[in-house]
Length: 154
Image 1: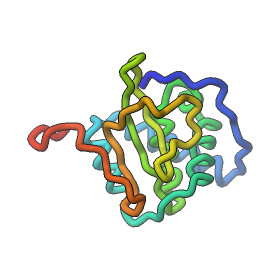
Image 2: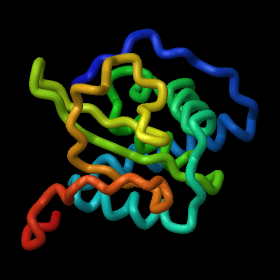
Image 3: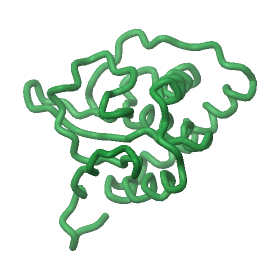
């Protein structure tokens, strides 16, 4: 992904939350190695049985990932967004997880959102077209189209 992040704010984490953030970042590190279609399917399975995340939960999870991981604090938006979603899920909630692109200037990005609003994103996200999304079933928003035609699943 290619959207730079400037001076992310770090939060003070207790022992439990710090450990939870590190576990979430570690799980995300493995998951982001999957092909896009498989990553979407794994995250869809993880989201099952959860309640919708609040903006506060999603923002805290995102900031916790940034606090414990240099990669998540920098250009690692894919790992940061997956880590935030995983951390929310470990706590029983699920934010909408999205990836997309913009054309002018070209850039790809991954983020989490709640109620259709990106959480903690410093850039103007209105120019991004969502390509892959794993939305909470009760979010009321339609999931983005599958990244591949039915016959070519990764």
